[in-house]
Length: 109
Length: 109
Image (tube, rainbow over all chains, first blue to last red; front, side, top):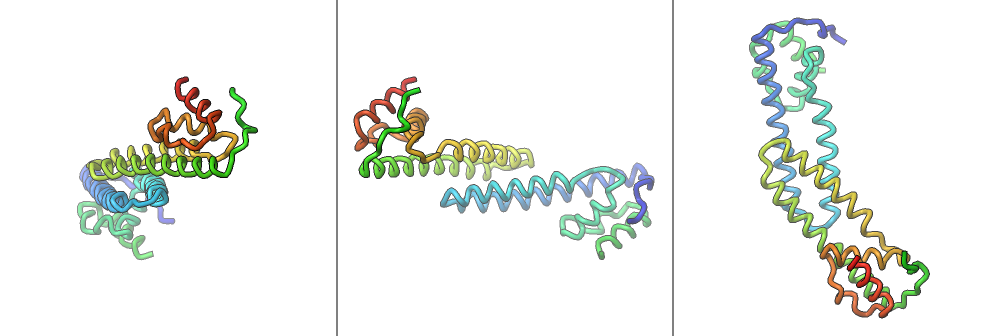
């Protein structure tokens, strides 16, 4: 694993990171909310409702684990978010080249 | 507690009971589905969605426990369903007077 845990984050980098993190979270939440609304409107049997519950349980668990704002983990979090499509690499502009290179490298793994 | 566990249920009574049970379940599921749709359409923040998840968790747990179709427990189940408004006493017509009296008595407790 790359050693990123002791990398320093400048004030500007922290602002960029917080904004990108918040943006990705908002997008993913919006996508889940959209699916929840679609599934809710299509409930025609109790099974549909319990499947919606299962869906929400799984998504909540995943999202709670994924959006962990710690600078020691942020490079990996960003790489995952880019890979999953919740964030664009160019939304991380403002981070140092070292960090951007690591995120980009991780997204190709 | 009233002794009802060893009471016999005739074929007709079983049919009445099954129909009433299914009707109450359908009504309660419909009511939950309605609230799920309303809450889903009103999601504007992640908290709203996790509260919907909490709501579904609680309702599922309660409903799973409540709709226990065992003849030994059915008098109590029916009393609860009547008390909560998911079933009308007159939808239990066809049950023996002994059972109806017990359900009615329990709903007044």
